[in-house]
Image 1 (cartoon, rainbow, N blue to C red):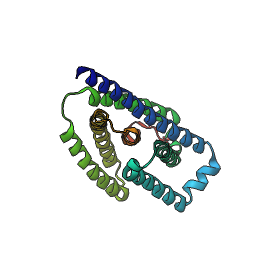
Image 2: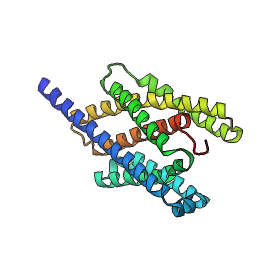
Image 3: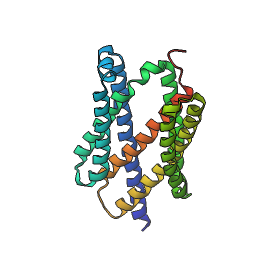
Image 4: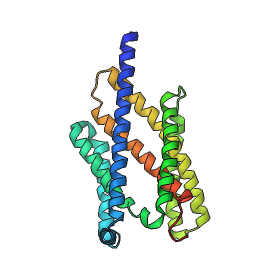
Length: 230
C-alpha cells in the first residue's frame, strides 16, 4: 500500500508541475501579446477606440471560460490547451492598456511582487494539512462583494475607496491562491488514485491559478503602480 501511495504522490507532484507549467505559458502568452500590442500605436488606437472590439473581446473571453469549464471533460488535451492559450492571448490584448496607464518599471516591479506572493501562497496551499475549504468559500463569496464595490466605484470614482477595494482584492485572491492550490491537489490525488485521466483537469487548474495571479497582479498594480501622468 505504501508503494501505491508513493507512486500516487509522485504522479500528483508531476501533475502539479504540469499545472504550473501551463499557467506559466499562459502568463507568458498574455505578457507577450500585451507588450507587443502596446508598442503599436496603430493597434492600440484600433482596439481601444472601437467599443465593438472591446465588447467582442469580453464576450470571446467569457465564451472561452464557459467552454473550458463546462466541456473540458469532452475535449481532448490538445483542444483544451489551444482554448486556454487563446484565452491568454485575448487577455493580453485587453491588458495591453495598462502600458498606457502605468510606467514600465512599476509594471515589472508589481509583477515580481505578485509572483512572490503567489508562489508563497501556492506553496502553503500545497503543503498545509489544514482544511482551507471554509476559507475558500468565504473568499469566493467575497468576490461578489468585490465586483459590486467595483461597479459602485465606476460611478462614484473615489480614489480612497478604490485603494480600499484594491487592498481587499489582493487579500481575497491571495487566499484563493492557497485554497485553489489545495483543491486542485486534492482532485488530482483522487483522480490519479482511481486511475482517471487528469489531462483536462490540468488545464482547468492552470486556468484557475492563472486567473488568481492576474487578478492579484491587477489589484496590486492599482496600489503600487506609478501612473504615467505622475
